[in-house]
Image 1 (cartoon, rainbow, N blue to C red):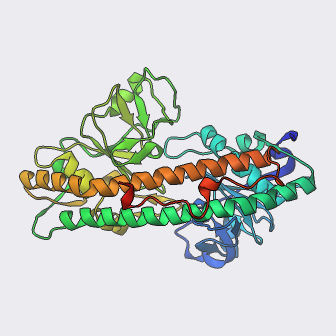
Image 2 (cartoon, rainbow, N blue to C red):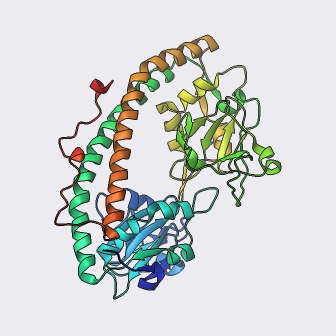
Length: 415
């Protein structure tokens, strides 16, 4: 069967949120539940009742946030796009979210799954340089299937059951990935955090000022122009996501072109502190305004700095100096003054070589586990889309046995 499609704005009222002034203590730690994208991203279920912080009546009246009723769907529309939850009770939210209040023709639980099925298209529709944002108009105009109320109930109940098993497997594999990452972090930190080496400010190791890139609102898809590297494009400390290519005109990109060995640090957002070591690649690359570039001089190798940026020495300094408002912020000026443990160059090269060998096996296991997680996530997404669109015979569906609870996790034996 197939269902007619309707604009989201025809079955939901879509409202914006806001944040009270963070420097006014009287606005905070009151009795009014208030959430943001980070709160939604930490949820283990589709329900939300409160966030890490709450606001007072004074804080509520001081800004443009809105209280929405139980059953409303709260969706993050920036930093990042696509976290979704159903409100258990009355709640308000910040400007990184929008609320969708269901009308009489749609159930909250079905609406939750219908919105989840559009997550990738929402992300693709996002615009921005610091972080992607989905506008209210684009959210309202996106279309979702709309079966009758009884069919909505059946689809939502089916997806609750079917996705719970997949989520259980993803959770197990994610826990393994976290353990492997902790092992990697410990291996790196044990070598980098030596108290025997003097520390030097990062700015004294750079041949150029440690500066932000080009803050350009207009992004393009012209592959003949320099690739525009944004915070959201960084996949690992040495790789970029290849399926999100954006570019800038050469005359604009020229202000922030990358060279071999340049390192980028994220300055704001949920990914602040994330780093990327750029290597010679085909074509030219430039970087965004909320990334900070470091270019190594003769005293330090870029590979060593890349490893240092993955150590506890680096992250402890970031956590002490980060500014917390709506999103984390660590400025270029603060990066310049970070203290780097600095062994001699030959020792740096030895550390890079030894850690490369020591972490290779761990990296391989992490990669295998992440591949498995991606397969599960893709399967989950396709299942949601098919169910919402009316393409699954619930009575005949028995699931994909390759994703059973007995499916193997990536282990050291996979090597």
